[in-house]
Amino acid sequence: MRHKKAACFLFLSIFIYGYVFASESTVIGPFKAEDRVLILAPHPDDEAIGCAGIIQQALKAGSEVHVVYLTNGDHNEFAFIVYEKRITLRKGEFIHMGEVRRKEAVKAMKLLGLNENDLTFLGYPDFGTFTIFSKYWQDTKPYRGLLTRISAVPYKNDLSYGAPYKGESILKDLKNVLLDYQPTKIFVSHPADVNVDHKTFYLFLKVALHDLEGKIPKAVVYPYLIHCVGWPLPRQYHPELGLEPPNKFLDSQINWQKFQLSAEQLNNKHKAILCYRSQTESSAFYLLSFARKNELFGDYPDIELGKKTIASKEKKVPELFGFTKLFASLSNELEDFKDSAGDRGEVVYSIQDGSLVICINKDEKVNRRISAMLYLFGYSYKMPFAKMPKMRIITLYNRCKVFDGQKLINTKDVKIDITDKSLILTVPLKMLGDPDYILTSLKAYTGTAPADTIGFREIRMR
Image (cartoon, rainbow, N blue to C red; front, top):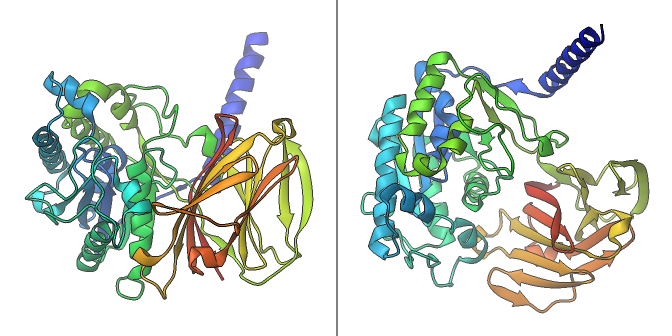
């Protein structure tokens, strides 16, 4: 009897979990013949890992499909040591690595139904694109690869051979692709992905879409997640399992959407991933973890804040998982925005007296031993993005350093206030170029251990 009760309880638990999850997750709708599907892949293999089912389904519906690769994936030194059984440190060898991965991409996509002319390679530096986005614009010297020592696109067959490693180059290439292709659906790497190239392609896409408003149709954007610590589990090839969101995002505001693969689509996805021998020989256990019954997509909703000056007051809500939730209650007009920081706590954004205020919740036990790194990239319709400030703020207890790109700024305008339950940062909007939008991400630390991490969000200023 005890065993029957346990079995019933387990079944009921699974049923309830499945019902709750299903109510929070939707299924990606059908493709149409008139759809123009654009897949943005940070590296060759990401398109197969994240979107192989989507590619096949779109082609089956008669849609056009095009894949754009931000990099040629030439920085994965460990994978190539395993693959080629030798250490490669010379400049020419890195280019060789990128050419190998390009050929693998052509083979994999042919298996899924695409031709080589359906693929565009941009050739920017693997593991260097976020540094370019945050620091290398305008009059700065081009970014130089840490291992490759290359500062311009080295691949003769890529879209912009010889283009300098600068933000303007990548943005121009992406905008040209969008203008030429006019996509209706865009699949892009996720803003909360821990791989820097993945979150960067999302950021460049956001800027490009704002620049091209009114010049191209408004496309639906579907971010796909690849890199998240401890996910997906179990590792290895498990086609009988579904791909569920990481636990850390279950309480977030991300609206997850699933695409269910047919048996044939799943089998083709498995084969396409195996086309990337340079990667699977060292990481098949990980890459094949994505060959499952469904693919997963989801984005944060935009944050919308008002610019008018309003007073604030503290308001407490009940303690959850040991964290007292503290946030600003800004009159009755809901001018603030509360954001879950994974499974740890909360971050609150608000506008007060012409400044962006970021309130990071913390445990009382942390006392004042809390620090943070905050990125703030402003976008304005009145100013080219290349000229807009690109702020990085690093706090250490009650002190901070402020950078605009590569420059350290001596300023007292950024305010820090640490209470028993929160770290509050106040940044004047003028420092951000009086933006219409802000792309922001932060990581909070207690001592040396990361406490909360928020992927890149877009704040819209009303």
